[in-house]
Structure formats: C-alpha cells, structure tokens
Image (tube, rainbow over all chains, first blue to last red):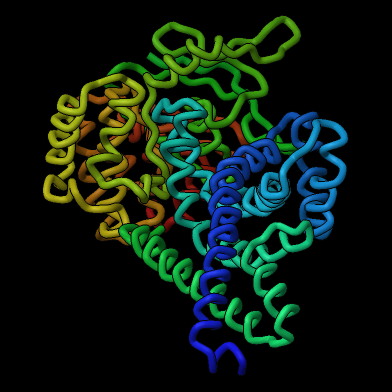
Length: 220
Length: 252
C-alpha cells in the first residue's frame, strides 16, 4: 500500500493520472465529435438504393466491425503515414477511433431509421414535404429518441476503449497508470485508474439518463 | 375535377386493380365500398401517388398526373408538376399517421409553413380555425399520444384540410376506432359534406355511405362492379354480389 500510505506520493500519482485522463477525454470527445455525424452519413450511404454507394459502405462497416480496433489503430499509425506523410499519435488514434465508431453508430442509426413507421413517410409525402424535409423534420427527430439507449452503450464503451491508445504509446490514462505500476511494482495505480474510468462513465450515464428523459415528452 | 381511366395496378403478379375508370365532380362525395382486398384502398393510394400505377390515366383538374404511352407504359408528370398536382389531393389515413414528436398545432402548421410557405402567424390562425371546426380547439398544445383515437383522426382531418386540397381522400378513416369514436369522426366528415367539399371515402360504414355519399362505387376483385347513387347501388335492385357483401356486414 505504498501509495495509499504516503499522501505526497498519492498526490503526485493523482496529478499524473489526471493529466492522462485529460488526454483520454480529448480522445473521447473528438472521437464523438467526428463519428456521430459521420455515422449518420454512413447510415444513409448504407441505405442508399444505388448499389455503387451501398455496397462499398457495407464493406466498410464489415471491416470496421469485423476486425480488432487495436489492429485498425496500428494500421492507421504505421501504414497511413506511408501514403500521406507523418501523423502524430493522437491524431492517428482519432482517425482510427472515429472511423471505427462511425460504423457502429451507423448501424444504430440505420436500425432507428428503419424502425420508423412507413406511415410517417407516407403522411409526409401526401403533405407535400420533399424527401430531405421528410428526413430532417419528421424521421430524424423520431430516430434520435429511439437510438439514444444503444448510443449510450457505445459511448460508455468508448470511454474504456480510449485505453487502447496505449498500444501506440499515447500517454492517456491507462498508459500513465501502467507506467506508474511498472516503476513502483504496485498495482494501485491501475486500480485507481479504474476508478477514474468508473467516474467518467458515471457522468456519461447520468448525462444519458437526463437526455433520455428529455425525450419523454411524447410516446409512439 | 378528377378523372381516372383504365387504371391498372399489380403487386408482384397479383392484379389488384384491373381497368378501373371513374369520374369525380366538384362537390361530390364518393364512397368506395367492397371487401378487404377488393382494391379500394389501392385505388385511393394510386390517386395520391402513394402507389405508382402500372397503366391507365389520372387527371386532376384536366391536368394529367399520369398518362399511358403507346406501349401501354404509364408516364408520370415531371416531378415538380406531380408534387403540385398531388397537393390538390388531401389524404386521411386509417391509422392517422400524425407526427408524434410534434404538438397538434405543429402537426397542422409544419406543412403549411415548409411546403406552402405560409408565415407562422397565418399558419397558426388557419390551424386554430380548423381545430375549432373539428371541435378540438383546446388541444392545440397537446401531443398526439395524449389524445384518443377519434381525436387523433379529427386532428389528421384538420391537418389535411390545412393545405386547402381540392379533393379530400379518406382511407377507412374509422376502421381503427370503436363505435362511439367512429361517430365523432363521421360527424366531422358529414359536416364537410354539407359544405360541398369534394371527397372520396373508402369505408366499411354502409349506413354512413348510404346517408352521406352522392355516389357509391362497389369494388370487387379489382373491378368496379356497381356504381351510382346510393339508392340505385345499395337499394332494392342491387346485384347478388353486393347483396352478399352487405349481408356479410349484417347491414342489408
């Protein structure tokens, strides 16, 4: 119990972990920032009636969901630079994570969009709405309510998946904790890091509970 | 006002409409009756472009919505023209299809503002007037899920009327409702008939058809088997087929 018995040492560790958590949080937020909208574009592509759009998009989703995220991370970090020049570690992480999560979000959106009753499309059509208006004003708002719960699942997973960035030596929370454990021979840093992840996901959970409640104003 | 010639429609290999022709005059209330699967809903859906026809012609106000080329293939009007023509038709669904995420008022205003380009003030004034007409002025700020089925259907009627269609179509508007709520909705349609609004009503309510319609069309197997005034079609001289159908309903 070398950390828990020494307030100075513990404080130092907490500061290091907090700084690592900052990096984890930026992976988290930027991944969501890119993948949530990208996922919608992918979902629409996947549902396109044009096969030259839907077929490659289906293939992309298959690769993203069918291979390990860590492998995708390596691919972006080690091979993409050969094509486009050097990419810093953090940016590599964001590219790999955003592409991966967009595929999962896309399938969640697609399920939500397909679950909307055909009658909603028909009602919009007879009222003269264009296809774009129908999607944005009628279908999308109802879809968002339906996808919130599965989206929250993915977002919680993402908090923990940020630790995969350790694999390409991004100094996020998990790497910091692992290094502290290696240096001290104590597993305490890893368990304290676990509490950090738990704290982040508690916030995420409370946030989604609040958001889902906000959609409670109507039932279908 | 509406002219339909030789309409044909099949789903897969099953012909649902075979050579259906009819004319609807301004101010006329046309009731379409017949068993499930006789093609009456499909006919109504073709008129509103919810289904594409396989052949035949539809003209609204003497303007072609769809015609047939020499090979017998249907030829629809260009997209913009088609939308304009479809806006002359209003449609009320069996299961209302209100937008659940919008208040009653927004349900009535959204298309007025986004499709017809009315200002919010104009749209809301019109919406409130129509809600008054269907007896729901106090429900403007409620959501559809807070209303009974009959109230939802009356909102749906008001929503269709808000765009000032020339012909209002009803696809079994009371089939999802219990007898009491059915009367609520039928009363609204009755009031509209008194105003000489042009309407086409697909219905299983025989008494209503007989009482409110100016013209009754009886469909079976994708054909119009009898048509005329309610008395002529449903009265003494009616066909055996129709007697059998009315007998099934216990309403002969």
